[in-house]
Amino acid sequence: MASLISRLNSAEPDFLRRLHALLAFEATEDEAIDRAAAQILASVRAQGDNAVLDATNRFDRMQADNVASLELRQAELQAALESLTPERRAALENAAARVRAYHERQKAECGSDGFIYTEADGTRLGQKVTPLDRVGIYVPGGKAAYPSSVLMNAIPAKVAGVGEIIMVVPTPDGVKNPLVLAAAAIAGVDRVFTIGGAQAVGALAYGTESIPQVDKIVGPGNAYVAAAKRRVFGTVGIDMIAGPSEILVICDGTTPPDWVAMDLFSQAEHDELAQSILLCPDAAYLNAVEESIVRLLPQMPRQDVIRTSLANRGALIQVADMDEACDIANRIAPEHLEISAQNPDIWADKIRHAGAMFLGRFTSESLGDYCAGPNHVLPTSRTARFSSPLGVYDFQKRSSVICVSEEGAQVLGKIAAELAYGEGLQAHARSAEMRLKDRGEA
Image 1 (spheres, one colour):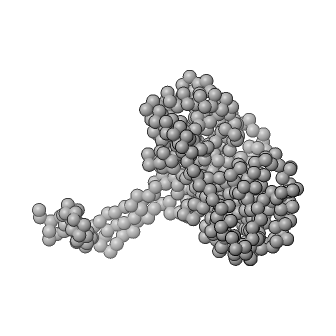
Image 2 (tube, helix red, strand yellow):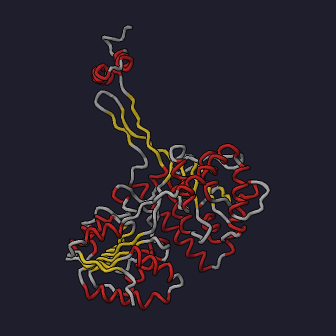
Image 3 (spheres, rainbow, N blue to C red):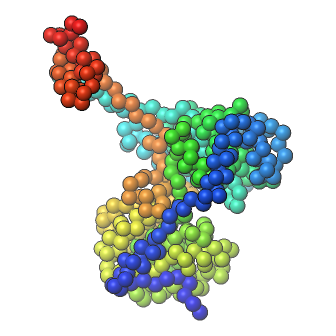
């Protein structure tokens, strides 16, 4: 039987070429999708509610008479929460509490109170931190429902102090997922509209008669949503353009092979473009994991998706040692990095680029997806080299504070004027000079 997943060895002469080929994923813009998204955005900008209503009825097979009928009331969100089984509700509430506690700690640690300091001459300098007024949260609602995405996007916004949270979620054929609505109730979402696609992004970005304009749009979506988010960036802020999900496991060979195989499955089951890679110095252990993959795959309901993902973008890679595994991990800069080893902190200290790190054999990535506490909205496609997880800081902005004393103006004015004259900006120079005691006369 053909291998289900590629085998690589870092000692092979062409290893880096094969690794780069494996990692090669560019979010290539489908021209047809981009054109369609552009047309929808233009119509929403020009026609407001009418365009949103038309697109929603057409693409989601709805029969709404107006956009107002697409808004869900708080009572319906609460009813969805009440409809959950006690076990499901407890799980959702416990997850929300952990996510909230983590982000409250993050807010405290990230300088959310701003700062002011006073110089010897009385000049005061500092920074003021303020939350965004209104944000939009996009929650997928087509092929699958993601209540965890509601928690991860809404709770840090709420902790940051955002004034109003608007959630959009498509409901094809009018089917609403009670767990998603319950998550919105728990997270404190203010308004929910059952719209999706590029029309939802346009409504949030430009505002319509019924849907208020937001300052930032966060949350994952399909290719049309991604294309629309790219186009509205600048009119509003966006979190990121997310690529396929990724997991990289560094293992010293001490974790049960079945555990690691299932960890690889956990990302591969997202979609065919997802990536799952294992790095280990022990060839016999890699063989054992491959045997686990072959044995466990037929048990997976999404085995066809997993099989395609592993075949096209997965790999089991033998490395020289754990140090080399860390070097390769930094090159890959994965979204999720599991360090499944006896002393994970030793190796975590060597990691510079990862969206999130999961340390130790008991820390499966799936715990981070749902309930560990840190945010599961993470940079993908090697953007962890320069990007961070979604957090409280994404829902805040910082304003510089400058209050120059009369004495301070005498020093700073001369510096600024000299530099302004050097740039050929005389008005800048004169503006500074007019505050100087010996040159204030016009």
